[in-house]
Amino acid sequence: MPTRTARTDWTGSLQDGSGKVELSSSKVGTYDVSFPSRAADDAAGTTSPEELIAAAHSSCYAMQLSNLLAEAGGTPRALEVKADVSLGEDPAGGFRLTGITLTVRGEVDSLDEEAFVRAAEDAKASCPVSKALTGVEITLDAALEG
Image 1: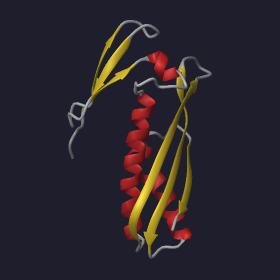
Image 2: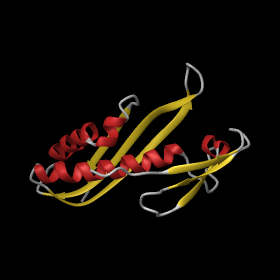
Image 3: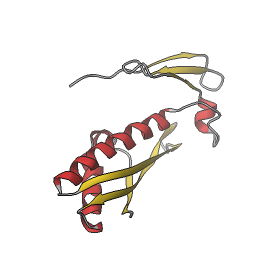
């Protein structure tokens, strides 16, 4: 399996500095990062490690759930997955990820709500990004639509 790479160039201190994170493997873009924007309610046009983790988690989860739904006999027509990654103070000092909420709404043929939710829970536990984030509480809100 391949290795994917991102890199960040950073200049300055935590509070006054800023950086650019480059998605090197895909070459799809370079994005601004800064701590003040990371800690603010308004991202002000910059990304953050938490947003990048949310992107990784939502896409990984969608792939895993799609596979598990098919294995359960369903035909996924559409999945909408949102990952909310929260940053907060760490009682031991500094900051930490304080939680992740996955919200998934699906349109799936040939499966009922119970089978969908069971597959959704299994995907939460088995997607590689979820496995990498075992130190963070991950909650799930899953429902069929249509």
